[in-house]
Amino acid sequence: MSCSDTPLPCLPSLLLPIQFKPTTSPSGAKPGGSGLSERSLQEQAAARQVIERTWKIVSEMLDQMRVDMALAESYRNGSGESPSELRLMQLEAEATRKIVADRINRLDEGFLGGLEAYSTALRRSNQEDLADRLDAIRIEVLDQLTDRLPPEVRVLNTVTQLMDRNDRRGIIKEAAKGGYGKLPKVELPGLWLAANQVISDMEEAEALPDRRLLAMVCVVREEVQFVARELRQANGEFAAALKAQRNMLPQAALAFLQRLLQVSDPLQRQALLAKGFREDAKGKGARPACGGIKETEAQTGRQGV
Image (cartoon, rainbow, N blue to C red; front, top):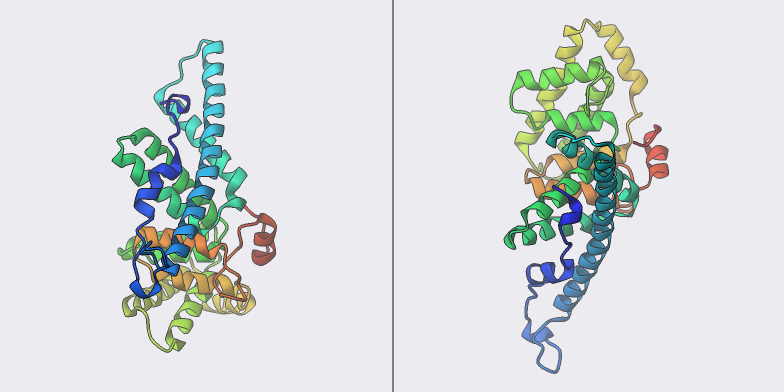
């Protein structure tokens, strides 16, 4: 499957029919009989801006992917090699990672929504190959954004989505031993503190948003201690580490995690994740790490991914 073989259709023409469904308001209708309220016109203009921004970035991404894949194919033809289908998939995955990494700081909260709508429209027009490529870009964007979260937040987000106790404990244990793949290394006291802070925040809220979620985080907190005992971390050692790591986790990241955990729908979680990287931590209190690498390092105290 070659990127150069797939023409890029006009993104705005695909998205306009599904994005613009304005409401009418007789009291707010403009003179002249357009039937659109002022609010609807503003929403339409905002949606158009999202579409145009998404179109520009996606076009750049796919153009660059075509170049990268063409170079790879040129190398194959020049060397006389015939790479396997698996190797071609690896080359495309590498190209996707590169084009996302080069543009990750330009993406805003509307990008993932625009990308999802574009992919849906492509499938409706039977352009499955291009839709698959956009889905791969969307997944890579989410992976790179998630990689910027503090490790404790990433692990807690993962284990609270697992229903099986053994699976949760296995993930906690692997993270404590050093992690693997995209699972980061964490200190168990830091993970316990992250869970404990989320529990405290939920209990202090005026209205408890989700009792089952609260119960799950409580279970995870206890399982962290279980794993600590299983790994033979003495109670005194664990308590001392708790005291040393207290207040080290970014409050904004924990507040963001609390919001993220309360969203069960995958698309809503994606939108919240993207939005969280663009909100002001002081103004809206939800940014775990901003879109920029330097600001991410300043908040988390570690190197950006």
